[in-house]
Length: 229
Image 1 (cartoon, helix red, strand yellow):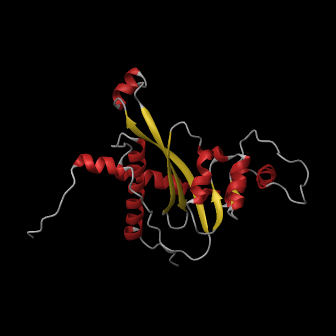
Image 2 (cartoon, one colour):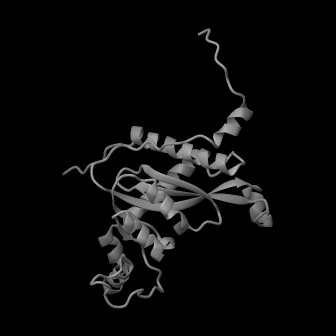
Image 3 (cartoon, one colour):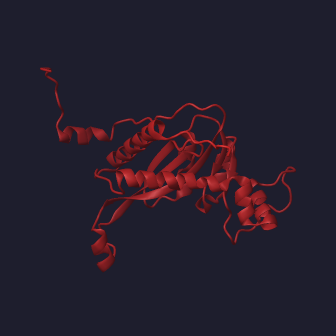
């Protein structure tokens, strides 16, 4: 086209990547959302998988963790947080919930979030916490406090009364598999490795991939509905 445009070199782009602000594209929705939460590991650098199997894990092998909050109805990523591999899942729940401005109806997680502060953080958003207690869990508060049981104790007593399988069905916990499906789509499309070496750049690289995944599902996801025979 005969247009002279300045093109930054690769080094300049690499230095500025960590300062890039990424906003996840999310389709508007009426009503409160049901968010399912999960995390996955992404490899940064290290030896190949074959050498690892033969000689064990290398000292240079390290990971980053990607924590996602996904809308169970649409499959879109509503919030994404990147951490090092020494962060516990429950430690970043607040950051994910704060990144979601819309009202929440329910937050479903796995047993790694079975902590008192996680219930409190979800309750602060006005949402119902669906977290399976550990199999050796005990009641936190015996007797009613101000006439109301702790949500975690309600879950535990319901499991003891009707069984874990029935509780998962009644609470909608099985919809949490949407988060695992999102992780599978993420790694199938983009792989399980990171190219950047600095943590800030790695986080932005992950967020860009999350934004691209949302665009893909908005464009390509079919509308499914039940057809009467």
